[in-house]
Amino acid sequence: MQNTKTFPNDFLWGGAIAANQVEGGWNLDGKGLSVADIASYKPDVDNKDYAAHMDISTETIKAAIADKTDKWYPKRRGIDFYHRYKEDLALFSELGFKTLRLSIAWTRLFPTGEEEYPNEKGIAFYKEVFKEMKRLGIKPIVTLSHYEMPLALSLKYNGWVNRRVIDDFVRFATVCFEEFGEYVEYWLTFNEIDSIHRHPFTTAGIVPDKCTPGKEEQEIYQALHHQFVASALVTKVAHEKNSNNKVGCMLTKLMTYPLTCAPIDVELTLKKNLENNFYADVQVKGEYPKMIEATLKNKGITIEITAEERQILRENTVDFLSFSYYMSMAESGDPNAERTPGNTVLGVKNPYLPSTDWGWQIDPKGLKIALIELYDRYNVPLMIVENGMGSVDVVEDGAIHDPYRVEYFKEHFKQMKEAIDEGVDLIGYTSWAPIDLVSAGTSQMSKRYGFIYVDADDEGNGTYDRSKKDSFDWYQEVIATNGASL
Ligand code: BG6
Image 1 (cartoon, rainbow, N blue to C red):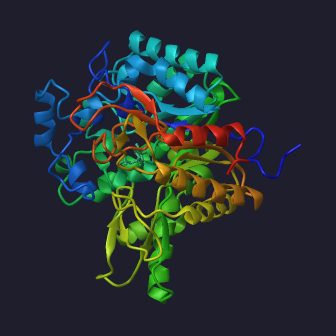
Image 2 (cartoon, helix red, strand yellow):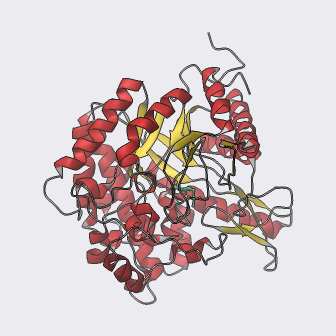
């Protein structure tokens, strides 16, 4: 019988990581260069200026390719999960994880993305990881594309702008279903598919200066459309290969509130939220929303969509919806309203919310609102696959006291429980990230998310030894009691 103090009996508690932020081994065993291997650490850039951190051009790519070291490219070294995965999985098991969300580096299997057959050493690595997870009783949730497409596809085709990349991705995904299908049931297609507008290179291999001048936005929408089609096609393959496969889309849930009840603030907010839901609309409902089509038309943007592609989208919708949630923002008609950064967005500052050191506004209630809104809108099971707080942690006599992290998670978990009690079908939660890793936005190690500390700094100095923060025991108890300890 379900205890009302606890989360549902089979609730999937766990954590989430991405290959490019943890593995390292960027040039080992036949791996090719990915777009993540080009991301440089920029010590002189303001932490809150995520756009400058993620800025990319043909020139910077050339310089990165010429540099064969990992000194300024922290994603090349990650946290050395490639060699230490057993130790890390043992710690996740000690935490009591039911699940671990992780991604497969496309370039470990297909170094340039265009090979006909996969690299056996890449397959062997992931098989070992999945075998170990199985031994420990940790179910994988696998993201097929988490900001790590082959650089070769970016350089040759300007990434997803070119329709032919769809075939390369379907070939890669099919190999994953065939090789890892015995271990994996839950699959996500594209991480934060909506982020293509905010960082087109990381998400879709698009180099802005290689776009047709004046057509940048149009080409980004076309690339997005190709990703939608690819996502639907691999959903189809996953279902054909094994009817137990469950495929989810993955959205950055950017919750926006009106700064005031002035009607203009409400209208602008409504539009922001509709735009944010658009990506899930296509993948869950199987068609482009009419309001979005009208908005694009008004902007002079025409996406080439064939009748066959519309059918593919309609017939291959996802089984569940997953999303990341870190912060919320406000919106205002006042152009002078104070702004603050969030997860690769700049929003209006909400006077009722505190912020992290990186300016992201902490809003547990927003998570409950997001859960209710998404479940009501889509009526499919939901999974929170990223949520957490980047902080500066200090080691004192070998210990890391992080009450701020416990506070952040505790308040979010309480809101999740309320949403479940009010009827939301939330089936799992994976924290970002259970272990410190390289930041996607700023390539810093010092922006720490984990319950497990990794002794490495922004320039790669350190032993890379793992140690438990105070929050480790706390999360372990939450999982052990299935939330009753909250
Ligand atoms: C999400 C990404 O947007 O945010 C992760 O999917 C990322 O890859 C996380 O790490 C937190 O962002 P950041 O920039 O603090 O690493």
